[in-house]
Amino acid sequence: MSLLNEYMKKEQLLKQLREELQQLEQDQRLKGELEFKEKLEQLMQAHDKTAADVIDILDPGDGQSATRQSSSSESQGASRRKRKLKVYRNPHTGEVVETRGGNQKTLKAWKEEYGNDTVEQWLERTE
Image (cartoon, rainbow, N blue to C red; front, side, top):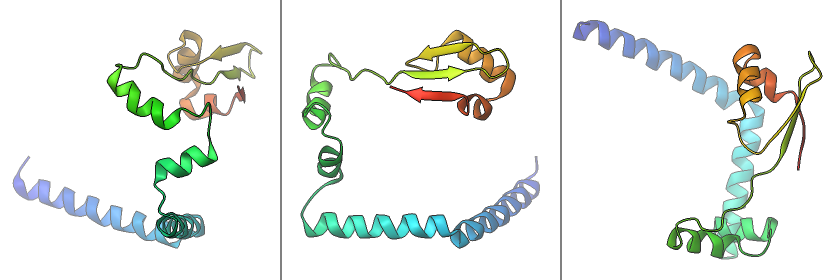
């Protein structure tokens, strides 16, 4: 590919990205999220809190999330939080799959056949 062709493709890509960025900037959901983030950061700064402090306050879990993160790097992940169980039901066959990870054989086959987005809509519950 010539340098000129590469330049023109990059220029076209840049134009497309600018248009997408303009569309995002007009999206009210983005404006709301940016406003929330800004207010949250101001509140955290006013109370001298970090993001980890806020997470511990909102989701204390077993009271060890902050200590687990620091100790897990030391102990090479000896104690790892168990993943949430996800239950999927195939509306075509009625078959149910319970998994704690995305590497489950049947689930992978469904995703190949129906697409990831479609299969994720089949999620019934998370425990």
